[in-house]
Length: 196
Image (cartoon, rainbow, N blue to C red; front, top):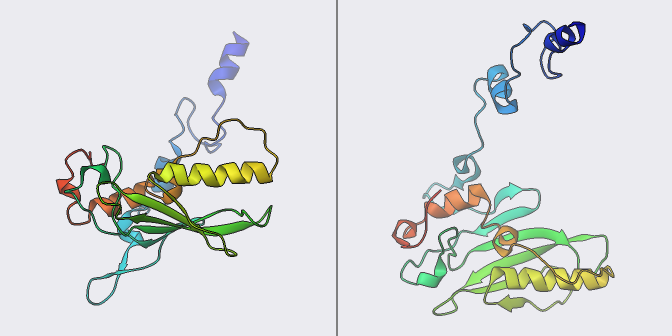
């Protein structure tokens, strides 16, 4: 009986010592909002700055390793330029910071671009160091698999299979980027795309 009463009198570590016994600790985001009522989730409206004429000011900083250089333009008439989950705007450009191909242990910037490849998009990743050639593929994942394979060779990794998400590396899977792309003209006309 004594053990049971000890369990009932314990408070979660996140609860203040004067909190009533049996009260559940609020979720972390609820606790933050209780302390700071004006705190709101970060939204794409906070990320986008526009000039006097209403044009987007670039770059748009998403996080420490991702910047959007250009959101591009949606061509809804080309069915391979979107899927249920992703939009692939022509002219989209992002800068992704990732491990260097030339200097082991260092990081470098990679320019990721979506080009008009006719019936389907063409993806291009250019390391922003040295005189390296751009990597061009018919999928964003294909570009990043090639980069990761080169890095694995450089690091003497014995991984037989390389897995990486191209949309994630390009920045297309970031929720803030998704929300920005959904506001582009023509996004609502992409027949397969399901907005989030």
